[in-house]
Length: 125
Image 1: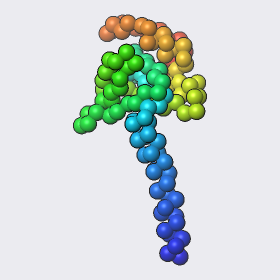
Image 2 (image 1 turned 120 degrees about the vertical axis):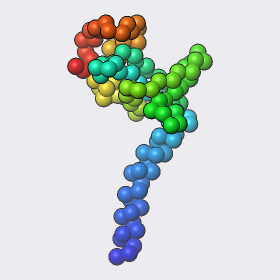
Image 3 (image 1 turned 90 degrees about the vertical axis):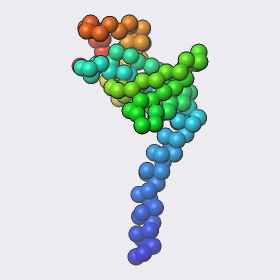
Image 4 (image 1 turned 180 degrees about the vertical axis):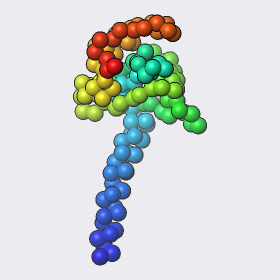
């Protein structure tokens, strides 16, 4: 019986270990990501589709940061969402955020002006 409980505890810990290992690997070695920054109404006003990028949480902050291919270090905090793209399934990762590739590109190309309404037709309401 004791062996049964030990095995059960080990198996339950593996799910958490897999998540933690995946997170550590993505932070240290890079992964594909989609990141959106949200306005105060919960609508995306910035969008990044990042390939093979290491994203790190800022200590004692709700922010994250990464280095762009051109060398710029980007820090964001506050209302943002990020999804790691798994097995190159960008469509599923965009859908997780209520977006498509076209919407992310449109948002990334827009210049945000506070208070202005933006119409991104295939973004989630």
